[in-house]
Length: 211
Image: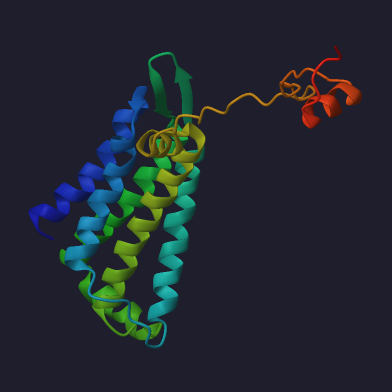
């Protein structure tokens, strides 16, 4: 293991330990663990082997990671206050997170400090074909644990949905002219003078007055 490996694992453990004391929950603090594990996956994950029982190992590790992450999120207390959303990791949440993250760290230390022959024997006995399968299993376990915990906290706090709403903005409602439901106003009628028909005939014929 390199110094970077130790630093990454310790950082993941510290993220939850600092929440043992209630801390403000933000979108940045939610996404930080995912960013750390995504960096590891990008640099060290070279593929997911599927030969013999390699895929079984990977799926099992992912299931364990998702379970630990979900329970860690469930046992984290989320409260809303006037100044924001706060998260407090209880003892159960911290223990579950350390069990996953610390367990991977301990396994890596053991594997590089004398545990190699035992892992090789176990792999040969159970149809695990290469070290790449173990690497993929550990990385994807970490990724599933982080993603599921983040999803649980995001759902419980509503932070991601609120952030998306702010990013999209709220369109101003269009102004609609009021519609009148009463009778339509009467059209103005142009006034005209009615002339008796007899008088009209006389005027048309040009007859003058009687002398």
